Length: 315
Image (cartoon, rainbow, N blue to C red; front, side, top):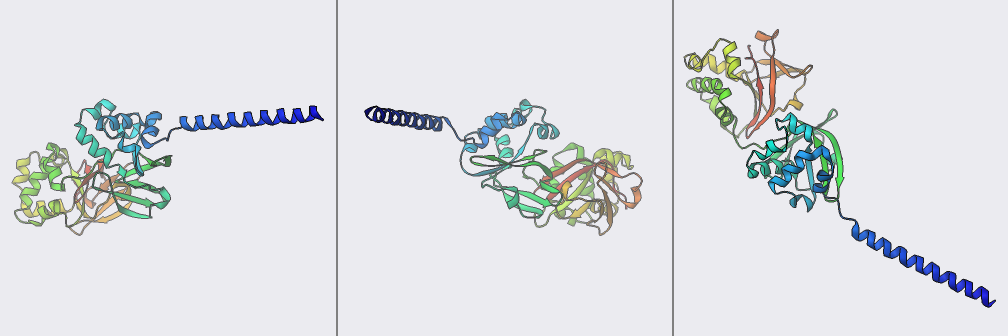
C-alpha cells in the first residue's frame, strides 16, 4: 500500500512538473510572437519589394504598423506597368511626393471587399486627404481604373487589396494637365483659339463644378490630321476648332474600367464609339475604319479623367 501511495505521489509530481514546463513554454512562445502588421506583410513578401522600399523612403513604415487600415497595394508588376522599373526610380522622386502617392493608396479604416458597395466611382477618403474612386461590378473591383487582382490579404492592423497599377491623386484641373506637358501643346493652342468664340470650353476644362472625360489627342495626332504646327491651329476657325474639341469630351468621370463596348454621347451631343476588345479604342463616324488607340489611360484630374489617344476623332 505504501509503495502504491509513493508511486501515485511521484506520478502526480511528474504531471505537475510537465504542466508547469508546458505553461512556461507557452508564455515564452507568446512573448516571441509579434503582430504581423501591414508593413511586415510587405517586408516579408517579395511581390511587394518596390512598395516596401518606397514605404521606407517616404518614412511611412511606422504609420503602417498602427491603427486599422486598408491598403490598395501595387505589387512590383504594378510599379513596372506604371513606369517605375525599380525602387531607384521611385527614389528619384522627392520623398514628400512619394509619401503623398503612397498615402493615396491607404484608407484610414479596415474595409473588406464584401463591405464595398456595388456601384461605379464610389468616393472613398484616403490618408492623403483626397478622394479615390471605387468601382465594383459583377466583373470585378477597381480603384481609379486600377484593377484589384487579389483581395482581402489580412494583417493584424488592416486589410490589403492588391492592384495592378500605381494610382496618383489629382492636384490639377484638366487644363492644367494639358498646359504642363509639351506633348499636348497643340491641344492647348486649339483650346485657346476656340475659346475666343466659345469661352465655355475653358470653363469645361478648368471648373470643378462638373466632371468630364477627355479623350486627349497628342501633338502627333493633330499633325497626322493635317495640322503640322501649333500655328496652324491658331490660324484655324475658332468655331470649327470648338466643335472638334467638344467632340473629344464626354460628360462624367469615366475610368477605363467604366468603359464598355458601345456608344458614348459627347459634350457636342454627338456619338463616339468605344471598343474594348484588343485594347481600348475610340472612333467617330469619320474614322471608324481607323480608330484611335488609347495609349495612356486614367490620368486623374480634379475635374475629370484623361485618356490619351493617337488619332483625332472625326464626326
